Length: 628
Image 1 (cartoon, rainbow, N blue to C red):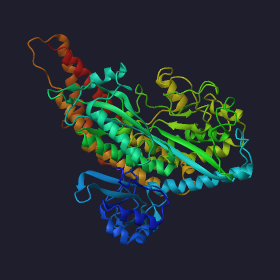
Image 2: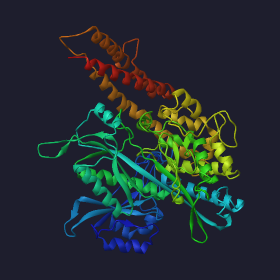
Image 3: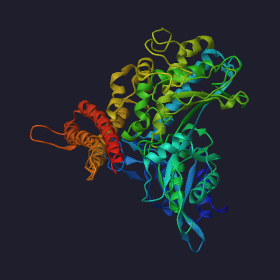
């Protein structure tokens, strides 16, 4: 293992890359990794000899092409104009992915594939998620340098002289949550829900194959230089059992792995690589892994909290966190920090579509599961006492002993969120907020962020509140939350309407040119197609199976309560799934609306379907429990 090559560092010279590959013949393939609008990463097997011979063509993007049927770029790479070039990105790390099930017997080493992050180029323009983030950061960097050089000093950052600022650094990190289970086995949702409430799983000791797989993951990721910080059990799960051979069965646990922050583009690349490594390691230990945001309704879903940082590099080589104030006991943060969070919150209606673009992602964002449901932040009760409010959308994280740790945590993302697009939208919105905030003192900024709904200000909307130190789930009613912080979208279609309903906010995130109207339209088209297809092909059939499974139970003892329950259940079953000549079922109405492109009607019917299915499940559960 120590003799293997795991990483080719960013910005390596071509001659050094060729030398490393020739010294490691176990690396037999290269794979170009482009990321499309849906966050899918491409993978292919190209013999390494071709890369060694044609390396200049790989850099130029002429060695490998894909087409519009292979990547999600609707409205861009169409079937009649499908050619997509894939130039490599030398500015990030290249990881070697080893297949430990396929050893080269002569070398005694596993066969490796060099995965090279790449861009997708259509008609001479970069149109992929990686390029959008890369180009957006260049735009935001220029905007921030202009601010420093024109203003000289920023409130809360008086020690930083604008003329001495040489560069802007964008740092990010993600935390990966996932469920792991024994293949083909199911655990009762009711048992896991009870275990979650009783907090029996969170940070509990790992056992058996799960422990082995976790430790192997941490060791492997460290070999790739990702500087793993922690692996632990999350809130969800249930206790496994031991079979007669002494092996654990009925495994169903939720885990989390955290690793060190990186440059924002590198951080998004790292996330994709970690996800694939975790899946492979757990599979090798006989366990299935799910990164879905809400793999099981009724228990905790998988989040992927996204950390957002910003720093400046001075001409003398020192680095300064741009969010941390000079006096951390006096100010929560600098005007730049206030600007970022205000820009994020004010423009979240056009950021949220990138964060939650699937049915699964919105299923996770429900009250009661520590997942954010309101566009609101928390700073802490006092600058002298940093705090963590786990009920808000995006919170300030501070360490008074380490100013470089000051950052924001966006809690709404999930493992399949397209991190590249989310970060591009956030940093674009941040620049808008920063431009407003740097014209004010930190006292004025904290007052702006803390204003009550109905109170005017210099940047944020008058009708809304944006900060709360309370428990958003418990201390507000649903009506109060919606009034103060806005009603959250219930469906993918509702979420995508943010682009249409808030043109002034869309203009903010498209100002840099990389995240432009064409890209947004492509992203939206793909998201709505997946929404429609999943509803028709997966969600409705799964719900139909629930309806069919709610059957009348034959019993020698039937009470009036049983008859009453069954009458309600059967009426609900018919409403959901049974057509007549004159009356169509809810399922049929929803399918028809989707096929006719009446997405507004379909969205409302989807919400009703979810409500009716949960009502049916509750009624049938009560019905079954009363039978003896």
